Amino acid sequence: MADFKSLNPDQLGKLLLEMGITMLHAGAPTRRVNLILFRVAKAYGFEIHLNLSTRHLSISIQDAQGNTFSGGRSKSSLPGVNFKVVSEISNLSLELVKNPLPYPQIKDRIQLIKKQPHYPRAIILAVVGLAGAAFCYLFGGNFLEMVIVFLATFVGLFLKQELIKRSVNIYLTTYFSSFFSSLVIGVFWVIGFSTQLDHAFATSVLFLVPGVPLVISFVDLLDGFILNGIDRGFNALMHAFGIAAGLASVLYIFQIPF
Image (cartoon, rainbow, N blue to C red; front, side, top):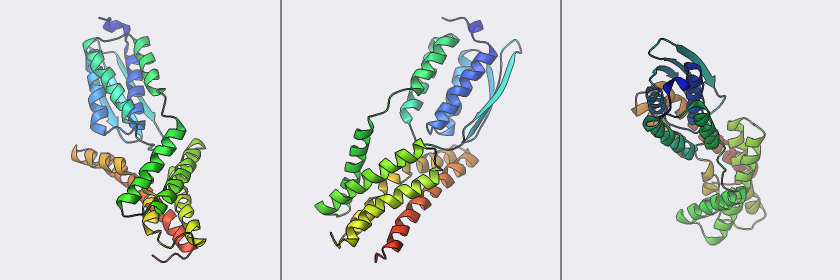
């Protein structure tokens, strides 16, 4: 077992901040972040006090000898959800309870978790497009509408990924992604390709619906983290407004009767 002295308050404090902000960035519920940080601090014999919001984490730790560390980390926005990262950090915390590791090893493990490769972009675009087409079918759409929804979802998600790369405001990103997805449907309607595209319009923007953030906001509320739950909930509702605004813009521009 590693010597506890190999991890001083400054080292552990920086690791806890890195773990906490990484989990927040991956969309972890507040209670989960609290649990993991307390678990790791206790494994190394430290007492921890923390203040956690959806965008900021402040911690203060103290060992048995009275040595302390206080610090904070922030992030500017609430990005997408990555539960794989949250799960990996949770597993690491459980491992540290059984076998506390020295500072360099923990730091390397956290960096490896953060750098996990994502699925290839082409696969993500294709699978999400197929999911949109499947929803169209479930809602009563025909084969033609399914094909159009696949194309609209593909275009909208591609644009969303590009805007995120360029650090465009997340709510504007949602609006423009919704606008261009429904614009594809609108173009097919204007050229007379089909006059029955109501199912296509309804399902072309479903890939943008913030379902998971809404669930996490309710989880935070039920766990007693009222401010965090309200913050996450309003963030999700702003995305929902962006989706509706993008779709409404296309319907207004083309004067589509619905």
